[in-house]
Length: 200
Image 1 (cartoon, one colour):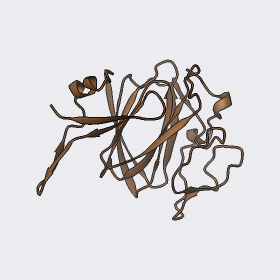
Image 2 (cartoon, rainbow, N blue to C red):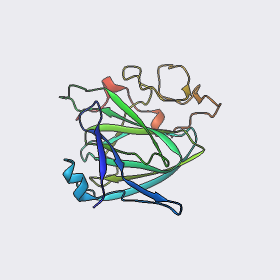
Image 3 (tube, rainbow, N blue to C red):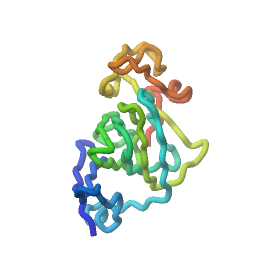
Image 4 (spheres, one colour):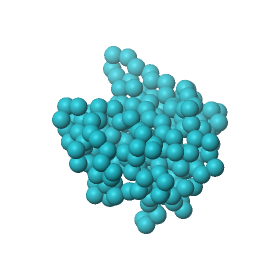
């Protein structure tokens, strides 16, 4: 059985998970998921779907959630670097509307578990990033919701990102410090702010 270090984030329902890495001159080995270790740490979720994506520098994906079929997500990066963010949308939570972020890289091998009831997204900081995640429910077309990535009421501090909020969540006028333009999908430039979005 492997070993993991689990750190609770300041918002209940969010966890940073660090696996034990066994390395030598040949390379390394680690268990990326072990159900027994997770249960021993008090995390007894069951995963039903694995996803993987590749994104280029400056891409911001999110902030996403499913309304009727909420997903818990265990996320990690296997190539490059991203800043990963969760926003609490649980209406009875004492931290409703608060955010927490963590940098996930191929080098630090950290994983981030986001429980059901959060919006989730990430910003790519490296030239390319490959992102893997396990989900506790299946993807349901038509059930997806979203939250404006730059809502000033939430105030996410995206690293390396410059720009001024102009009353909408379009990418116009935003770039990384090295000049890389912010890159969002059309859908992610149309989400509402916190006060007008879905609550769990």
